[in-house]
Image (cartoon, rainbow, N blue to C red; front, side, top):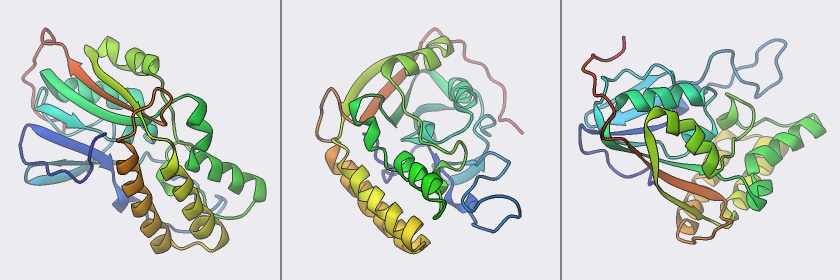
Amino acid sequence: MTNPSSPIDSPRCLRIGLDWRWHRPKPRAGRPRGEPREEDRPLRCDTAGRSVSAPADQLPFADGEFDVVDCDSVFAYVRNDEGLANELARITAPGGRVRLTVPAKGPLAVLDAFNMHRYLVDISKRGLRPFETADIGWRRHYSEGDLALLFGPRHFTLATVRRSGLGASETMRLSGFVLFRWLRPSRDGYMRLSRAAERVRQAESQVEWRHGFWLEVELRKHESAARTVSGPRP
């Protein structure tokens, strides 16, 4: 599993994640609390010496600029996954790698804390929906075939694929939702429990199982893919 805390120490490496700075909870007339804004959430892009935010389909980097792009679980939350896949194909150099970790389709998908909490809020008519899923309302799950269909036409091959995790972190995360997004909303309390759940996720990534909750993939861009020399997008 990718490690979101690993340093980005090379200008040829990029890490893409959710931009927490975008979320500023404010009451909006006519819209339930926790509902997404109209615009897509920008992504946070970190590389050596700089950090920028940009829409998923308009990353401000030159064609073929990176040899390694680490997306962690972004594809589970972003609205425009095809637009992001197009941008990854553009900014990744031929022979370069894209790493991502997404919730997998399968028997453990029912343990997804984000989606279970969404059902709880909708049914009970109380509480706050997860702000991580503000773009699409749910957390998206993929199969290996889904990723092959998404990235195959964009000159990527699935180089390595593994399933891991037993869903233990989802149980912890769901308790955070119930305590701090449903019973007594507290952003700070929820963030503390989310960090603990993330540590459990990292630990259980060592458990490899063919029905694991997480699908970890490394994609490799074809060496024959044309390298263009255009500059970064405005």
